[in-house]
Amino acid sequence: MTPAIRLLERDAIPHEVLQYTHDSKVAAYGEEAVAALGLAPDSVFKTLLAQLDDGRLVVALVPVMATLDLKGLAKTAGARKARMADPALAERTTGYVVGGISPLGQRKRLPTFVDDSALTLSSLHVSGGRRGLEICLAPMALIALLEATTAPLARA
Image (tube, rainbow, N blue to C red; front, side, top):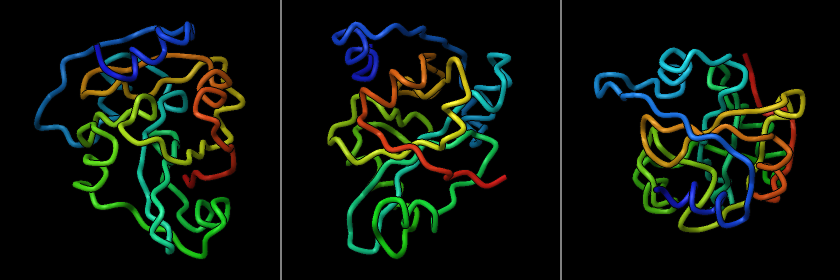
């Protein structure tokens, strides 16, 4: 059981855990989850860490088939610029490995921003805390639990 699942169970948040066998040759983790589990691509969100120009780290969730709009994230977070965080820093900060970083149960709680397309979904999928593990839950439950801000963060 991962910290993400423990958090959901502790807080009695309705969720479903989905598993698949991760292929170590695949680096497009979210796209792999879509294919392996037969999920709608717009319902699977990747968890990305970005570093703002003032040094703060933030979490951004966008659909796996989209790209994070770093300018939009920076503006929403009250900064001038943002860049993707170094993968080693992301792993140390969250306690998860790249490709399995969950927005839930991270070692250090960070400000979190979710693409507003999540608000149109009845359920979404995020990493469960390791490669090959997805969690399905209601977007509003995720947003409330993370005290996340929603904004248009995805670019096609």
